[in-house]
Length: 127
Image (cartoon, rainbow, N blue to C red):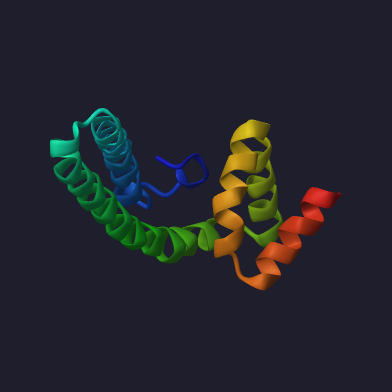
């Protein structure tokens, strides 16, 4: 269960399950990449199709997952914490991410942020 929501049993059951499924999906996608890299010319198209399908299904599932996190989970967080507590939780979470992982993650997260979020993050990183 998400540590910030341990006081609200069931609040994250769906997303916790999704996260476990995501780990299995990552393993499958990684296996598909290795299969494609090691495929013969004759098997390359089938290997690429397998990778594409697993990646497309993961992306589709992840959009649904993110909707759940951004609606239901956020509602639970807003009900359990005030703004200062949420900011402190976010800071602790970000501080727990190793710098190399954070740098790689930002490459993917920043383009998806709205301009205000991107500006706030850029200012925080500069500070």
